[in-house]
Each structure stands twice: as C-alpha cells, then as structure tokens.
Image (cartoon, rainbow, N blue to C red; front, top):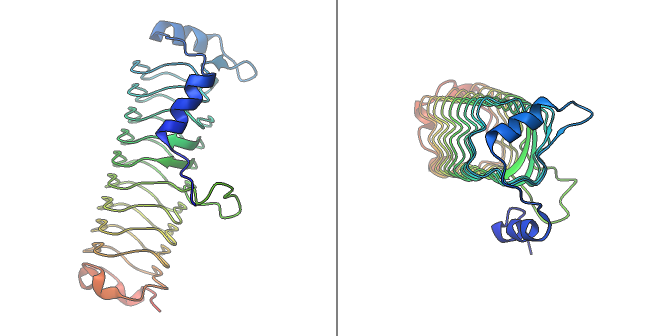
Length: 258
C-alpha cells in the first residue's frame, strides 16, 4: 500500500503534538532576523506565522524548519539555500521570492503563488496542485523522484492544474512528476527530464522541448501545438494518436520515437 507523504491530517497531528506555536508579528520577526548570523540563525523553527506580511525580508540566516506559513506573504523575500522541510505553506505568497537551492520536502503548498520566483537548483518533493508558477525560474531544479530512497512508497512532486506558462525549466529533473492539466504554454523545457511523468491533458503549446526526455510519459490529450520538439525523446510512447497538435509542432522530424 502506498503512503502519501503530504497527508494534511498527519501534518496537523505533528503540529498538535510538538509545535511550540508562538504568534509573532512582523517587527518581532525583523528583530530576530537582524540579530541572526549563519552560526546563530534566527529561531523561527516550528513557529506559527500564518497570515503575516513578511514580504521583502532576508531569511538566509533563519531557521524556518516546520513553521506554519499558511496564507503568509513572503513575496520578494530571500529564502535561498534554506531547509523548509515539513513547513506548512498552503496558499502562501512567494511571488518574486528567491528560493534557489532551497529544500522543500513533505510539504503541502496547494494554491501557492510562486510566479516569477527563483527556484533554480531547488529540491522539491511537495504538493503544489493549483499553484501559480508562471514565469518562475526552475532551471536545474531537482523535483524528480529519487528511486533509491522510497521507504514510504513513491514520493513525488504533484503539479496538477498548475500554471507554469512562460516558466524556465531548462535542465530540470521532473521525472515521474504529476502534471495533469498543467499549463506549460510557452515554457522553456530544454533538456528537461520528464521521464515517466503524467502530462495528461497538459498544455505544452508553444513550449521549447528541444532535447527533453519524455520517455514513458503519459500524454493523453496533451497539446503540443507549436512546440519545438527538436531532439525530444518520446521512447516508449506507443499511441501517438492520443497526443494533440503533433502535426502542428515544430521540428517533429527530429524528435525520437520508437
């Protein structure tokens, strides 16, 4: 039996049992950040920060592990390189934020705003269903499944119904990701690993998929109208008739099919 890592009930139980919930306001958070250093980070660990306006702040020397950030506004903040594992981040505003090389594991981020965010080099295994990642930078991000480390069943990033229009996913690893009904219109997916991903009903119109690996992906009713498929690999795709817009794509002759 597969166990899903982002059970809301499990996270709620963990917080009820172990969280030292402290209602902090922005001035208190700013004061802690001002006194912080790399070897003495600001203690925001497991703190209740729901709904706070924390936009534009520098959190690089903060410990936010396991904190509650639901509905918080961290737009244009710097969270680069942080470990945000097991935080609660549903409906969070991270638009324009710097999350480069950040780790987010076992987190529910449904309906989050990550538009124009810098997510380059980040490591996400989270539920981001219905989130806005339009024009975000996911280049070299590692959001794929680690098949050597699956003690609780298949843990993978969920990006169903997300907006990734205009996003840069070049050289990213999204193997086995869930991308059903995702909007990837005009996204950059050069050399992106999408092996075994579920792109059913996804909109990839106008996307640059040159050199991308779409081997063994689910592509039922995915739309490739106007997409650049130069060197894209579709090995293991047995039924091309279920894919929309292939004949209206670019460089189809150099795409690789079985």
